[in-house]
Image 1 (spheres, rainbow, N blue to C red):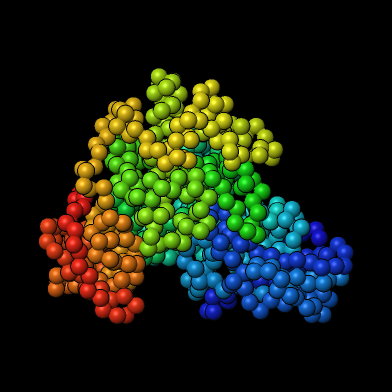
Image 2 (cartoon, rainbow, N blue to C red):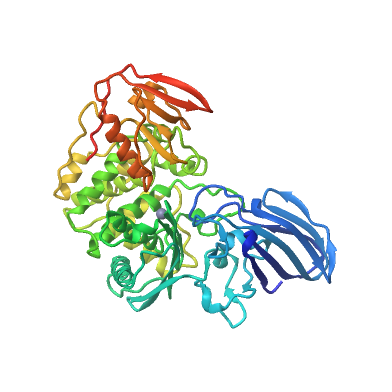
Length: 567
Ligand SMILES: [Zn+2]
């Protein structure tokens, strides 16, 4: 085998990518063909082969039997010489993780499309797109006149393709070309908005490059591509070594709204990842095993720190006022300190369990799943404050991250990533100080940092939540489906839990009133509206009528109503 050549045809009306792979078998024997079980950056099994159908294999135009041998694997006995594998992949996932295809838009992560022979991971990959002009393709892979070329399979997996974008913007940050392309509902993207987004992205990019490399201000990539799919109710991103894929609500790009601030912070988060998880990373992600889950206890480090530093980069780039630091931390504290899960599930456990919990558990989420993003960010803040205090302002968590990146930069190929059990050593090496007790306490033993003391390090004052208000609002998370208000999750020891609400319950009435909630833009808006609504019943007995699995149920609450007042 000297290269893996994929020819991809777009069957837009049926949402199928039709893929033909040719490769050379060096000798006769069994060849095993696989798609990944998960997508790097998103830590849950996706079992991408579930979208594959009509798979055939041939040599010299003679069909060869292919057996399915595992969830994501096929096997065939081949002769020496050229082999052709054909299959199609169903693509109608609007998220950043899989693939999408219709008349308007074509997007794919190669993890969804490139079935590869085992043992061929180091071969160069060629991707040809049938009937698609190369100018309409946005990807970080170079085009050689016929095909897009990746140096190996993993590099191809890490380079999503967006075809036929409606709007594009370009800018240079620290000498590196950056491109952003938009698909979907671009109705809010007028010229002034496009210029403003370019200006804001550039400021964030330059602040991040300067953060990791204050001396030479050199980015670790030669160019950077951000793809943005705008569609109602969407929000999310996935990091890549030289780019990111984002999804956002069309109104998130309306300049001056709080949502626009969130959109910029999403970009800042994914951009930071180009250093922090794509380069400096847990050792298990250096050559990740994509055939099965790859658990690491360090996800809180790579996601939590990234949440914390996205806020810092927003401030450093002057996209947010310095005073918003306290507001952002308050939001994180309200979101996580009010959830009982963090008292029982450590950040390390939450990281390891991400594969079975973070993307999976919904109804019991607030009680059983510690949010390693938001709570990890608060712990990043706590460690940052501890370092500043102990070093009398001479060092900070920034030095730890810069040290880790400088270590990676000395020899990226040999750098073995951060070993699972040795995260605290990084602090010792970077700072010459020992923080292993703090790290052990905060991340393994569920000890809450002394936020009152640590906030003082940053000149802030931390206020405890009132005693009886350790749960936010009514105690339920909601979603809006087909005009109905539906319970998504219930927090224990709250009004919602005392009533006996469960995930999936459809709200019919409260004390004989039908709750009036006009169609919310997003879940945050819905939560806020319902928190306000339930607060109007404070101190009263509540009779809540719901339907559960289609059957009517009347629920009563015994306990007194309490909650945290929304702003
Ligand atoms: Zn992230």
